[in-house]
Image 1 (cartoon, rainbow, N blue to C red):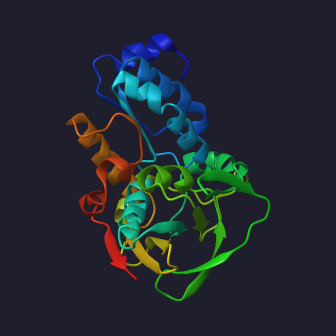
Image 2: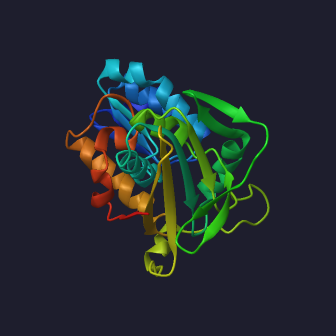
Length: 273
């Protein structure tokens, strides 16, 4: 049980870092974060739930006082966040960010269980430094290499994590593929089975677009293998760094602590458009 204090004490005794992969994270993240802070253990997870990023942010001071790091989003955002930081670095006086994620591959049962929490968060943007919820969804077009494609606004989490790494006050996020249904018979996958996927055929892509104060715009794109293998690789890479003493205490995003170099470590293809 996630609220078993004795169980947490036994599990975390003598440990350096916890990697939480148990979704839906709305049920596991809070007790796991609190247990890690109490036992002075670093916390890392692979959630895609924006409310968990906000929870991690709220634990920042407490984690810093305990001398540990709270890093939520070691999956997708291990690529997404450094890509944004790279793109921001290409322009003077960045004032706004738009990011679109084109996902290829099925969804795990954990992602399906978490999808309702992502959808229920609503359409969130950051405007003038504050997170706001939009009442209506307006699609936007992004080019992932094969011409413009329509993407829908989706609360991916950059309004929290990319704000942590870049400080950009205006952030919008889009998703090219519909989120999985939480009922019925969705297309689920086994992560282990993805090791045989032909990644030259099936890829996921992220486009980051940053506008400067003078109206100029720069775009960059990250290309990664389809499905969940990038999450497996990035979460292990980040935890390996933590246990070897490479961390910054308090609330962190992947790029705020590991910078753009994380892209190279993960063998992500980076293009300036």
